[in-house]
Length: 133
View 1: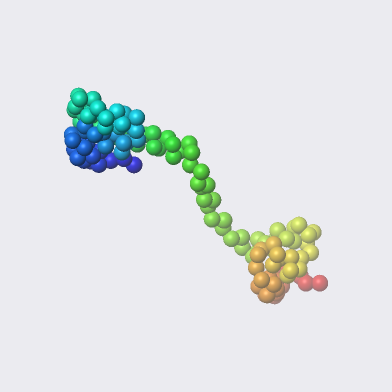
View 2: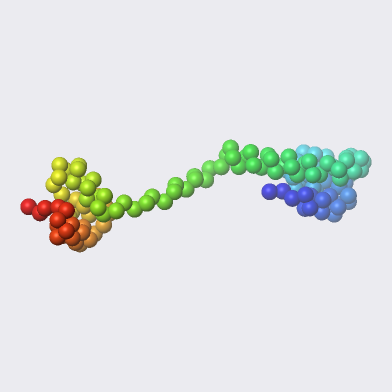
């Protein structure tokens, strides 16, 4: 993000724009070189730039945003996936296996340990929600 204050500061320290440092800062390399070798086109261009710097900064910021939007290679992070409840894992596994499940299948599907799966299946058995055969 380019700033007007920095552009004016560079304009001031480059001989009131004669060396064109503000143009290099704003990405206008070609005209920056022209300003550097011609003294800001005989100071006429340098004086013009004094009034034109806010517009040049706005254009440079707009161009920067367009480049970021078009060529941003950084992948956008996916929202964190909510962890599925163990009950839901058990139901999904039972549906997939026609009602027959084992602690190993639940552990594999739910990305939990075998002990957790067995403990939760035993808990559902004591509550009467499932039957062990």
